[in-house]
Structure formats: structure tokens, C-alpha cells
Amino acid sequence: MTLYLKLKMKDLLTNLEILGWGIVFIEFWVLMWLFVFSRGAPAQTEWDVYVVNINAAMAYSFLGLLSMAAVAVGLAYSVLYTSRAARYLTKFTRASPATLMVEDFVASLAAIIIIVAVIIFSVIGCTYMKWGVIPHVENPAAVFVDLVLSGVVLYWLAYMLALVLVVTRRTRALSMMSFVPLILAFIAYAQLWVDFGNLVYVIPLSTIPALLVYHSTGAIPPTGSYLWWLSGGELLQAVNLKLAAVSLFAWIFIFAGVSLVLLRKSRGVPIEELRF
Image 1 (cartoon, rainbow, N blue to C red):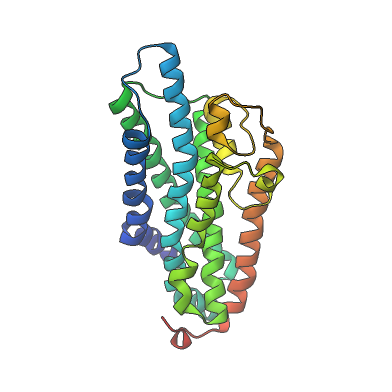
Image 2 (image 1 turned 90 degrees about the horizontal axis):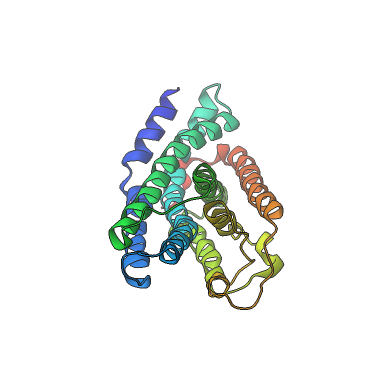
């Protein structure tokens, strides 16, 4: 483990920006989802338990996505502020842009895993407090991996957006650009009410809820209108889980590839010329 990796990991795990967006912000929404938007007395029948499990699955899916997007807001700032270190390390040491990207990713992955664990345990704890039921998950390992992957795709999106600002020397737009991941997450969140159809495979992040719902409940969800689907309304188009997974990994590779290209281009941009 290099000094850069150690310092980067320490910064991410103590960064108030990331902790505030990734934990405090989303804990507010967990409490709102379970104690305000969700109704019901303590579960007493099998049907009550089933409904509680579905509600928890939806919380993992949509609140988990919002949480990872909130983390990406902090990561965008982190990437921009460490661009100076990246520039000098690649210029005066043997470290290559690819090496720095890997180390930065590993450090961020550690933070993502911790935040995912917080999301899962907070949903479990709050669900038990409200209904007296520990929610059942069909495939806990897959749910954990799905949440981590959602963090990974949003990490690379934030990394790419920050490097776009560095290369174009438009760092004053950081506040606006850093919210792009959260905007995309809320577009995916709209699937609660809107059926995206085949666009679900094209819009970034939109297949994450489908994978999480499937691994949480074992049921193949539709391409949108989740609330209508759960209410037992008319049949909706089922999502293609293989295409959903392909879409997710494709966006990860696209964002990571563009980030590497931009990092190579940003090596010659002096930090002194950047405007904050």
C-alpha cells in the first residue's frame, strides 16, 4: 500500500462532505421512507411480513441508489482537489495515470463498502423498530454486491465529471457538475411511478433498482412503474436481467475509460491555473 493510497483512504473516511452526503443525508430519507411514507402496524400475519419484506427491498433499491449518488457528490470534490497530487505524482515519479486511478479507486471502494453496510443495517434496524420484523432477503450477498456496484458506477461518473472540469479549466462549475450523479439517481428513482420501457437499458443507473429488487425478493420486476406493479395492476413489461447487468457494467467501463483518457490529458494542467 503506497502513501498516496493510505492518505486517500484516510481522507475519504474522515471527509465531512462525503460522510454528510453519504450517511446523514440518506439516513434522513431512510427515516422518511419507513416512518412517514410507509404505513402499518406491527406485522402479525404472513401477508404483513411479505409486505414489510417488499418495502425493505424497495428501500435497498431506491434509497441505496440515492445514497451512492450522494456519495458521488462528495467524491467529485475529492477528485478535483486531489488532481494536484495526481499531476505531480505522474510527472515526477514512476506512477502512471492508470496506477493512480487504481489506487484512487481502491481507496474509494473501501469508503463505498462501509457506507453500503450503513445503508443495509439502517434499513434493517428501522424496519424492525417500526414493524417488529427483520426483513428477509433472498440473496443478501447479491444485494450487497449490487449496492457496491452502484457505488462503483457513480464513483467513475463523479471521477469523469471532475476531470472534465480539470481538462477544460471550468472548475467554477464544480457545484453544478457535482450534482449530475444525484440528478441521474432521481431520474432512476422516477421508476417508482414511470415505466421507462427499453430506455431503462440506456439511461445510466436505471437498471440498478431492477437488479436489487430481483436479488432482494426473487421476483423479476418491470421496466418501471414499480408502485403500480406492486399494487397488482395490469401486467407490465418485465425487465431483462441479463441486459440490465450488461448495461450496468457497460456504463462502468465507459466512465472508467473516459476518465483514464481525461487523466492523461490533465497531466499538463497546472493547478495554479485552475479557478475555484
